[in-house]
Length: 189
Image (cartoon, rainbow, N blue to C red; front, side, top):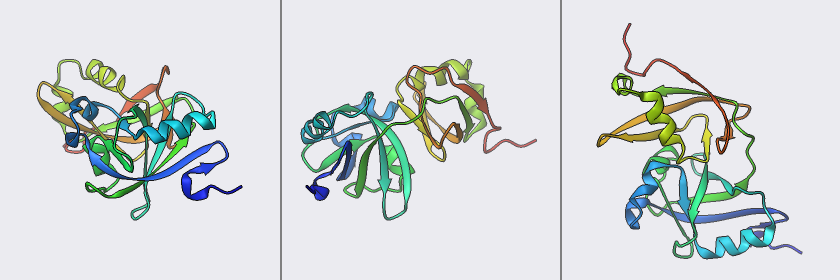
């Protein structure tokens, strides 16, 4: 039987949604991680597919072919919509109300990640490594080419994910991942 238009592909879930930033729903903590909010029907469908846990997803903007990965926080969005961090929408070149494809994936555990702060003032924080470790606890996965946002002392710092191993998308849940830093984008010798 074919249920192709309804996101059924054997053990995989694939669905399109209109996306909106976290500011549209009273969940400001959504900005400090990589979790999205999906509708209850997604949970029903995912539960029937016996997928791997933790639930991880590939987000794809088909019009720009940009891809990222995320986890899910809750299943309370209105049907046909998802809410996501604004920085994630920027990575995917999405505007509010744009269509995004959400597909469940299994990502390998991360072994290595190379990060590049946008500005050298991130390195002026008293303990940037500790701040980063605390921030990354709110993340499920990292994707090469993404820029993540780190909030600290009422300031937003952006950091590029330059490289991830063993693949372009990695799970960082319960992993001991080696972290390297590239010089900040605005660094001058």
